[in-house]
Length: 330
Image 1: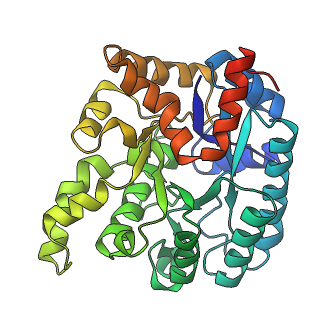
Image 2: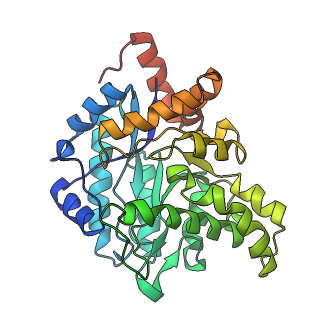
């Protein structure tokens, strides 16, 4: 059994594919137009029992109360898929731009209390240009306070934010070159601002093994302390170790070896980033993951399934049911 914690859904797949082209990414043709059957077929091929759905990351510039209706529609749709396929899908609720604090708090309440969400999905920053704010900005403290009260799981994904220069090559678009750094910047912001310690009950999963985080954490530890961060270098490293890290588009001997020096296997989760990528791409990363842990079956079982079951206890019932049945099932 395998649980995929990084699995997107598209309400308007063609619109999403067009937006992806604008940032330098081509959605696999075979995944368009997307519908739940596309994901279910891929999950069966990949050996994934349950996928935890999250909405595609909003543009970091998509701020305004008008996004409330779009986000509400996405969350209702995801919850309907979970009702239709209770053993196959969970979901992480999207929120409007966090600048809309009131709307975000309302969506948290609706998603958890009415829709039964398994957590929420956030991006690294909100707003555009000089007005952009990263997730640990003080304006967002009421949102973090509520997530902390609920002991919520947060899936944190880097925003598709362009740098001050064009991306260097058509084969090195924003999702490849910029998103990993955005994830790192958001994680580092949470750490050096003290918000990771202030809201300790929020379980934060960093997408793509944290992007650049494993390689830059030590740089932050000493240099941010030098610049005035009251946390000691060791405390900063400790806080980076308190995140969860998922494997989508990142599992390779080099990255997994680096992760082993940062966190134990109980902080790693399996992810695919489907349907933004093909099953062929997912299979390549999954083969790397399984090869790396070939001699450590308990560690591999933790990553592929058991860590997610501990983090998302509502999935436990589905595990018991599917094991007793012997097949994935609807």
